[in-house]
Length: 444
Ligand SMILES: Cc1ncc(COP(=O)(O)O)c(C=O)c1O
Image (cartoon, rainbow, N blue to C red; front, side, top):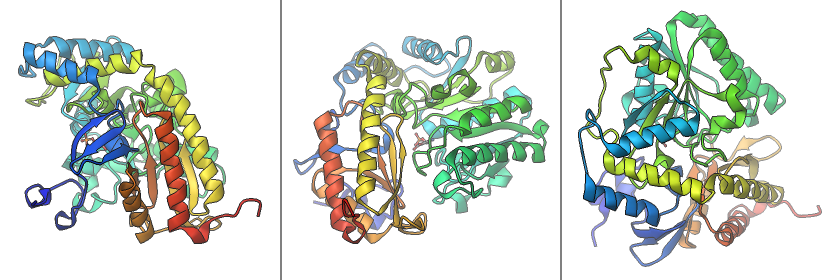
């Protein structure tokens, strides 16, 4: 049988080397492969299938909407779009605000920047983002992102983007001794960048609440300090919640962990918004932003933005998160998973740090030497043994997320507890097999 790569150019791959599984179905946290095998999905297919695969409620919602009304131009009204916008505003405490719907995450971030520039009266205002961030793969998003895969393709400065170092406390760019201090210094770097450019020239600061693609989980001190710094300078703050919302980080929206102090002016959503069963993104803006733009022309639009089928899926997804207590479940299982991963760290010297602990999202950083923190491979390369580990996991029916020397563990929030335990046991076994020399003997 000829392979799909003869016809399709896939994401993020060398086309001629494409060698990924082909999926024909799914149920819960499991995917059914073309060859009849099942695969336990420990990454929610790039942190988006929060509700698992083929959730019956979502499938039924799409079917019912398709029978009623499949499409109407995004410039006209549609009942599921209105209902979803109202629900999102209420859920996030942005009552009186507005929602602009997109097709996914990249266009949500682009439009968030456009809206922030319009609302701030700085049509070409600067946007401050950080290194080791990911906001999407369109040109504007590549400019916004501090991502090793795309940085060479675009001149960020020319797009009005200024980048600052990340709150990466394991390898703190400010040489801080404590995560708390690293978080504060990283936030101070944002403030310093705004001051250096002049707050009157900066339209917005755009940050991920947790960096899924680059594996950075900010210390608790970061977000509140950052938020205070932007408020004091009257610079709009956009939270990229595309990966981190809808229970992934233990809250509906990850910023909620910091209470009202952490509230952004604008947040962008996608992925878990529909549990990925239909393409949808959203820019949710506060009442204050809505008031600033409501009497101006908005020069932006997407033919399929807020597609009725996707909005129907979004409504069903919100119901499923609520009725199945999935936000709370993610918090509980996430705390357990984090402890189990820390136990693995105690056994396997190849684990330098386990990050996360809030919801079913964890990053495991692999190192050549935990004492010196020497990376297993220079970022963003990946060591052969890590590649072999991932391949062996797939052969054993489990798919973990992985990038560079990171393992990203982010299963669907509906994952069965026994499946979660089995996947972590497999990881333990495979770490021992592929990194035997670095195994720390117990009681030694
Ligand atoms: C934090 C974040 N922002 C933006 C995006 C881009 O979303 P999309 O792939 O839907 O364009 C992603 C996707 O991985 C993401 O994780």
